[in-house]
Image 1: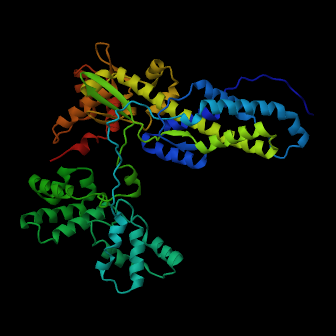
Image 2 (image 1 turned 90 degrees about the vertical axis):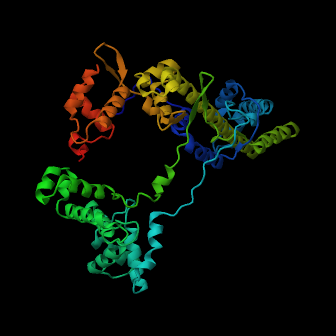
Image 3 (image 1 turned 120 degrees about the vertical axis):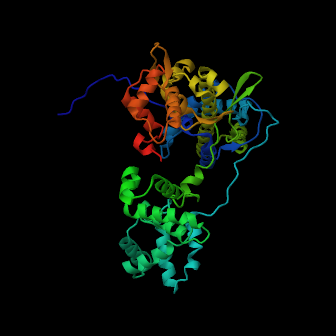
Length: 513
């Protein structure tokens, strides 16, 4: 049985422009240029320019938004078109007159917060060969018997990951060759060619695990005539440790190793020094697809110390000046001139409505970019004021406890907006380029009742561990005691959590001879 009910609901919906702004806020300066290029390609009414006029008032933008929904649907009947023609013509005429008077081509993006004498800085493009290309060029050194063997070797090299390890099983490579290249091979043939590939540079490539990689590198050093004779004994001992006692070595059970191998502490120390010289990731010296994109950090903000004052500037160099296309402006002017002479057709009105839609979209995007820059500057300026002592001195112990809510209250922005600004953004200071997210921290109370940043506690914890006796590393319990002696009220599990966040191993794995 069907029923009709009348109900009220209070809903909060985001407009397309608000969604667009939130997405733009999340984009760092390094990728903003690409996003703008995508918009330029998608919207022909958006253009690049170097105008220096100021942006029109926001009321102009609001007027464009009000008129955004005045299009006719395709396929409507003629009588429907005639009924709405007068009202639509009035809105369209008002829009065209306002547009021509305002000359929206003068909308621009750039923020004049940098000197005109500043040099135009661009990111250098590094031309370099990849790890796999380097290995491919060495195939000729293997002196393989035929082209078929070269194809198999190339398949094996292609299966080596970016760390230099072959983590794909030989039987799977046999299947790959069968399905992709119609080559019938065997496990023995794959193993034989793999042994040859493992002789290529860099040493250790093509291993199935860390143990095999270290053995390959030590074998290479042991066979190297340029290595001094007195070092060969330590290399042979290192080979024995990896081959026979790898688990004890990885867990740093040094006393157990001395007993099992019947060697002195000095002999063990020299052997371990040889192992530590090896590369656990043989391909780490080569650029990969992922590492190339992360080689350069483009700061979103710059803070400089000038005449005793801190100056904040926003990096807007990656965002070109934007404006509405002159071509689309001329189209509207042409339409305005025609309708004064004769009655325009339905097709002409539909065309000009399409033009209006594209112009509105361009205006909204320009406004969103400008609002993004203003929101970012406002947020970073609040962080600068809040952490002024740190930015003045660079002393990490002067960082105050700061959470997203603190900056949201200062700026009047929503916490989610502050979070979007802080995420993936960087600021260049005299003490290095820092991630904005790192300035936010919880507070920890001292014995005196004073609240300090957890970043300060982590810095002191790191200093204590760096200064410890590596022969007898400090346990988490001892670290807790030392911090408490300095006045920090902290639990052992909190020390363990901070240590893990600093990527510092437990005491047993920090032990050295």
